[in-house]
Length: 261
View 1 (cartoon, rainbow, N blue to C red):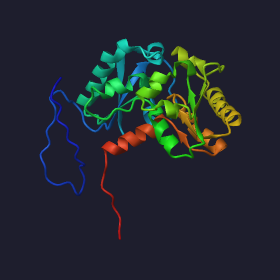
View 2 (cartoon, rainbow, N blue to C red; view 1 turned 180 degrees about the horizontal axis):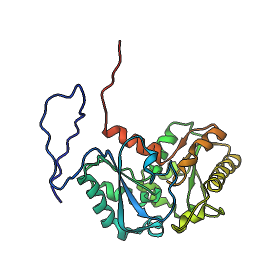
View 3 (tube, rainbow, N blue to C red; view 1 turned 30 degrees about the vertical axis):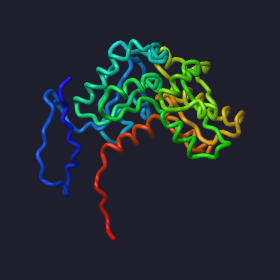
């Protein structure tokens, strides 16, 4: 692997004179966030991690060779080398933080973070510990996922969610809905409103059946287009992949504050 030279300089009116180098093979600059992509032939609505209009800052997408919905959801560890290879390429291209376009990349969070030199946040599930620490100890976090059968204890732990924290999580999956499972096949079209109604309906069901749920986390990267609806109808905090990516971008691209005293 090439010796990567990082320049975390902000180029602006207060930037001091300094010399900048670049890593050989780096052909571009200015992508704070690199996003690992599994292969799926689907429409990605604005709000989805894989739609560039979701962001007000540049992101760079890169497909992980050999990855698809089935093996990412299953946490197939034979993919680790390919995931690390893609993450290193994004790092070479100047990205400052690595994220992913499927929450189930969380299966690989710990092992990938151990091999990459920049911050790695592969699943919105990482936010579970943040959400739980913010609420009363007798309250719970509701998690909506694409398929609850794949949201394993091992994946929770890979994302830093301890067994004690898991006891305060309520998990509902969209695998038995009518429209949403088309996403799980990775092929074909989607009805935007039907998917949204199913996700919002699941959120309502979760809160009605678990009145101690005080916040909702959307583990699936196809769900953020409906975060605003869930929050408006349930009046509670909503965490998703985009709140995670925005946070990750901020910690690696701090800029000066301007104003008056």
